[in-house]
Image 1 (cartoon, rainbow, N blue to C red):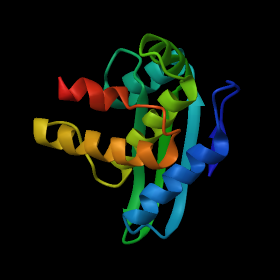
Image 2: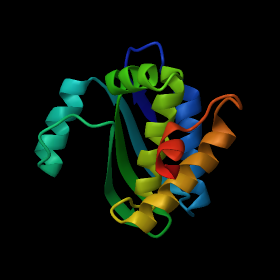
Image 3: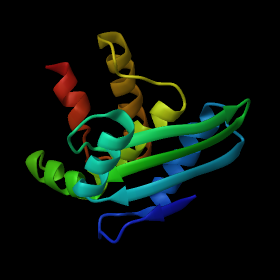
Image 4: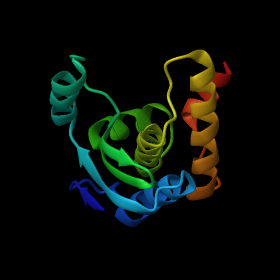
Length: 148
């Protein structure tokens, strides 16, 4: 697994480890997942190119190939969005970025957030993985927002 970005908030080993844990729990035993942390301009371009959404986003994930227990995929997260959103929600950028990577990895293994019920399950899974991989003092702002 390869992580690319120059921002201080990137904790490469933690991001790689959480992705490995999520896909392993889903039964993936082989393959390759690329993880890139990019700026808003890059994720905006990718979002427009691949999803026809003309705006930057927090994270994109792409399943390139899934056959049995093998997965080839990509996760692209915005470090700039993580910095901005973390400041707005009074927690650290590394935790926000971790949330994005968890969200992207969950999409790779079949979780979705297109319906209210799917979103509730996605948030539950995000909170579970954050509780395992993040500082106990940190909180999931997405989970808090969805409870309102």
